[in-house]
Length: 318
Ligand SMILES: [Zn+2]
Image (tube, rainbow, N blue to C red; front, side, top):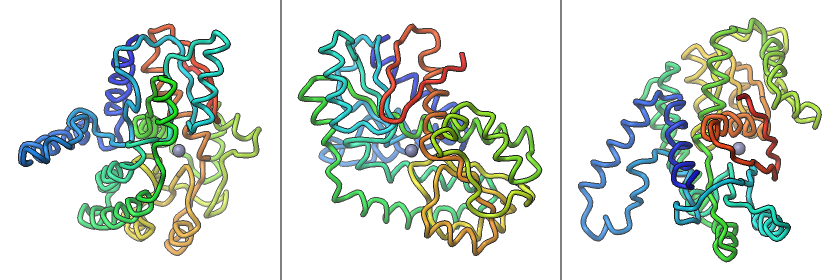
């Protein structure tokens, strides 16, 4: 499989499983095209043309010509310089790594992580939060994340991959879309009665079972196991945590339980004030589930060899 094919498939599967609906993702691309057409010639020169076809600013080919043949992939949750050197060491041991895949964004995709967060406004709106509230809170939070990312030295791993000439891709939101939509449909279907029933359902999923063995299994962060689960919102995609001020609107919109990968202390306090139950499914376990579901779709009919590193465990479902 060519690198271009692998990458295009990943973005397209991510769009199919976008919790806004595929239409929401397509709508974003159409609006971006309009923005591009209205730019001055010098602005067009520096425009990210990829954003006209890929709605996820945190997922990009970071190094590679796109024509490379891909047979062996090194996949990790976080790829830093150490993992790039690991790929090179494996190459020297005759295990030729054709591509490195990171889940968390690196390079320019990391610097731009905040812009993917806008999709969360549409997701919240689908769960009943008025769009004006969702957009207003999200815009403020995006600016905050942008400011936090500004001083980061985000090109280190990409620089190493360039020097060693190893193709490098990061796939963040497409994988997070997979886990969010998969779990949401499971819970919509099975309608767990109590918060503890949610934990039990999560434990049936191999990635969470595996995490439990490493003491990182699903946990109740707010609420108790006998509380009613009620209406569940799986909050697992759209870059990073949204605004901490959203919990009141979510609660008033009828959301009783949130299932998240992780939650900051500030967010936890706000959720508590608004009486929302919160189940933490686990960060790395959820990232694993998303990547596995994505790889099932992207690499299903190809004989790709997948090597695991940096917290990733391949569990295939097909
Ligand atoms: Zn993550």
